[in-house]
Amino acid sequence: VMDETTIPDERLELVFACCHPALELDAQVALTLRTLGGLRTEEIARAFLVPEETMAKRLVRAKRKIKTAGIPFRVPPAHLLPDRLGAVLAVVYLIFNEGYSSPPTRDDLSAEALRLGRALAELMPDEPEVHGLLAMMLMHDARRAARFRDGELVLLADQDRSLWDAEQIAAGRALLDRALALHGRGAGGVYVIQAAIASLHLD
Image: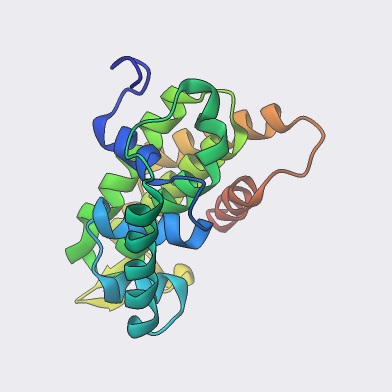
């Protein structure tokens, strides 16, 4: 078991523990969303674009594999964290997306994803995709107050920009700059690219 100070957030520790590489990536993400993310099976199925019954079967199979293979539920040592990063990023992204795509009643999910994203950036400050994901979430979340009116979604072109959180947008763009700098000459990973697109949308 790692020292308590290695991962600054208890729930993030548990996400890393759930994302065991012995499971398929989809199973890691789905099981973690179900166990820790607070998402119902129907919400996870929607995130994966599959029927709820299909997702329920995947979750049962993943749990069975953990039991039969004796997969240990513990936080991996520091040198193995990068091996689980892809699944952890997907978990945080999908938690955020579920909250962001829903009416304000699920703002708790977006807030939890942002909290996990900040803890992840503190834990792995040299990972560009970590900063890209957090940047993207911050820039999208900055428009939260303008996205719904009377329970109906307001399209980007029709949003009241005075309701956007300028400070949060600036923080997101600063993180995007850091992610791009860490990538060097590369085009960036999927989260860095999504953050760059989010930044353009804000223009």
